[in-house]
Image (cartoon, rainbow, N blue to C red; front, side):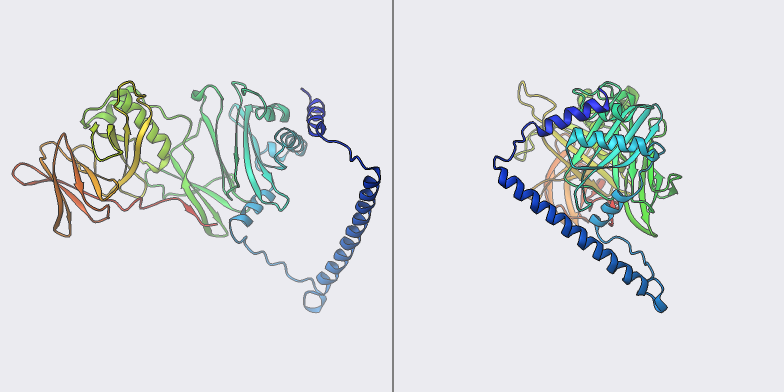
Length: 448
């Protein structure tokens, strides 16, 4: 389909339900009102230009122009407007003809209002574009990301938005409900083959600076050579965090988008299962580890390990087959996942009954103690081999204790930082201690 054919099709669709005004006199009067309104607006605009000219001429000392002092935007909405008003990034985005054609086609096919191109360029074997949908006041309502083979025309690139289903070598995503000043786009290169990888893009307002820092510390920041945006293709994806600095102020800091699908090899699964307590189905463990990697992304500094697996019978809402994972996180400490699936006959093993995250200040893997706060001042404690009792302690005072069954104890205790759980052997000796965590020590920053 050519651009002309597309325009004709879309215009026909737009007017097919439009009916003429049944009253000829009404149409004539409306036309006269529009003409008067147009003349009035034009006159007002001329007067405003004249007044503005006088103000500029007499604003400064001695009749010199008043100084133009640039002030940083105030609030996220103003930063979004500045992002939308920024020149398109990328070599292809600088092509005026390509930019105009792409925005026209996207506007016609999506009917989302005004379209602004934020980025367009060839990345590896693909051509990628990111556009914003804009209200009349300049604010953003959402974005669309498109990918097609390298060198694709604007029509081919935009066709990813309308093809049903998308072509195997093309893909797209759309978001709605507003925009952030730092737009993140993470798009698989194929709608049907996740193994082809993905492209991740971060776009900040013009004049800002994007930096990246590699894991595990994510503290050695390096300025991106592209300045106000960052691009990672299949060949250069890495575990890192991104930071946006505007006029010397850190405005955003967060983990970069996860690259493509997260799959682990048999050897990596063996490593994740080494030291596991309890009983865990191997394929269920694989799914849980891959899901955790995809969910938490580069907040984790290592691949999650399987801490424990087994069957839970209490409290209410937690009964079923359970698996517990844990991994160290950026900034220190550990993040864990508890996932419970139904153990009823014929139940789908992939349907999660209960899932939660927890944080701990002490090593929970191997023979460490993992404390998992629940509801109603209850907590699971996963304890090392040889432990027969677990007790919750705060400031040297015992809060509660419980017997251990299959490396697991259910304790009555509040989920408060500073509370430790001691694992005791049959002689009452402390084997290990686990501390309740307050949450991640370092999280994403949004300072717009």
